[in-house]
Length: 337
Image (cartoon, rainbow, N blue to C red; front, side, top):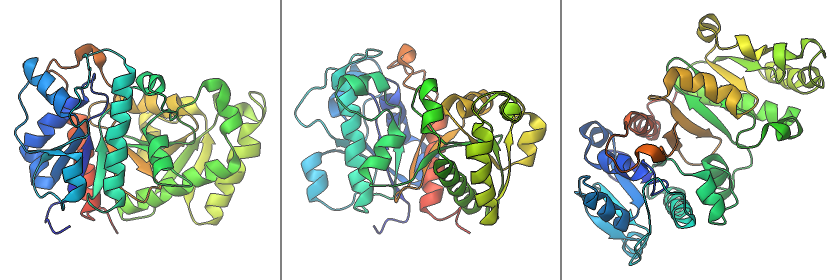
């Protein structure tokens, strides 16, 4: 790829959500175009429906999938039409199997492009998990899709922002499943992935923390099944033996106070909401989701499909633009030490 700016694949997300309109804005946003060449993997028929709904029509070439696979790398913004001659039956704010399948298809083709080195990274707009399930797609979310389709053995989700960075040992599972899915090996993997990523981002070894699973970090077995002593502490000790600076397990209710946040470069959490709730309280419009451990770059918005405001032209593109910025900087090597 000879272009001086990184080529980034943007996936449109669930067509019934805000992803399509956000991606269209990225194709003409000056700050985005200064950093990268955005190529949207999506649906031309949805773009046409957006235009009919009063949103701006697309102002760049539309390339069919056969053309994309047959020709060389694009050097200007474009829409890769993954639907061909079909008209996708998308209705704003409506959950449907067709939209779930389409959103998955956009991701598949973008991953293939990244694995073939035709793009420098992938930035994803939000998908809808219920729509995915209706379509027969078995993955619960982006993180699992990327890990499976890239053949990645160990990966994890990182939510990155200036006020707070968190990673998660488990993600898209129910609370009752969390204790069974947590192993000392998995905790160690996430600690190591977090340390590697933060060293890359900060140009120095980071200082990390990890939360306990139970209230008060278990109080020495008073709460829970001694997960802190049996699972978390051994992983922390092994990480320290490998030279990683980490404290914990910390009581989860005190880990995210202003004073604690200043002490740590990133905090490892044990399950989805333990990390997502404090993060979104602090950085909902500016946070970026990064999948660690992949052979390709993948970043994403940190919000959902926002069906309630879909196709109305009022969605805030801030998180998408920040995800693009981070992916472009990663692709350009600006974070590398």
